[in-house]
Image (cartoon, rainbow, N blue to C red; front, side, top):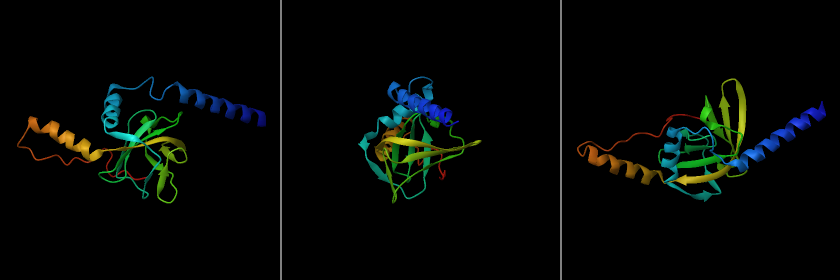
Length: 165
């Protein structure tokens, strides 16, 4: 019994290592996912070691198998990349984050995925990148302005507004 459990654990670790080196978003990425990810990557800064998180989200959006954006406030967004084998596209109910003293750290904290019928699954955070969301919104307003110059600026909220961990 112990040998079987050990063999299964080693097989899972091997699969994780192979998945991690094989590429993070290869395979079944939809065109909509590609567009959403490209939109956020265009405004993503360099990797950072951590960000401050006060225990709840303004909103969040899955972008690919292993990437999501979390809004800690209406104007503060972070692109997170997690290690395989997590698949964030099918997150049914909610997500959470582990943190230490209101700080989420790359490589030590995790996205906790809660889906119906499956217990919580921890997805270790590999990388954190701050999104320049204010510049993104300004560019979106500027692109929309020629289409209807008399319309007031949009105050659309980020996706999944009101989602809580």
